[in-house]
Length: 165
Image 1 (cartoon, rainbow, N blue to C red):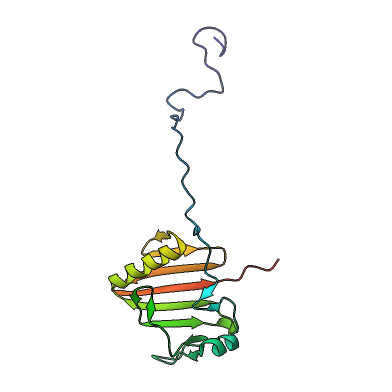
Image 2: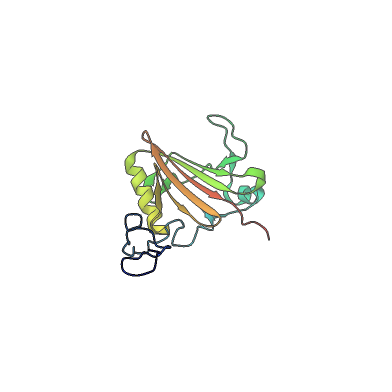
């Protein structure tokens, strides 16, 4: 008997039941946690992203990092406040590749300071995102990356100017 002719006929386009995929119940829409929910920082410690090295030296008194070794394009403030929120930090560095302010790095010690920094940043920028051993915030042109490994922590701010159209 040809398909579609009479009782027990099977439509040629319908797979047999053992091949059909089970129907899934609708899943709730999960929020996109790729990007931070609050506005990105416009700079770091009163220095706007993209500022020239000359502007930064005049405004903050930046000097080149020379210890433990010279780091090209990396500067520090002699009078730097070694705190972030309630956390104690060891060093703060300002990065100027090609003479423009494009990032900052903070080194700290211990789990207590990690959690104090994380709480401070969550208060400023909302919840971040955990990826492996890193916790961070992402915007179109700014990233903040927090990490603790073997008792030493680092916090990095990076800025990438939007592409010119």
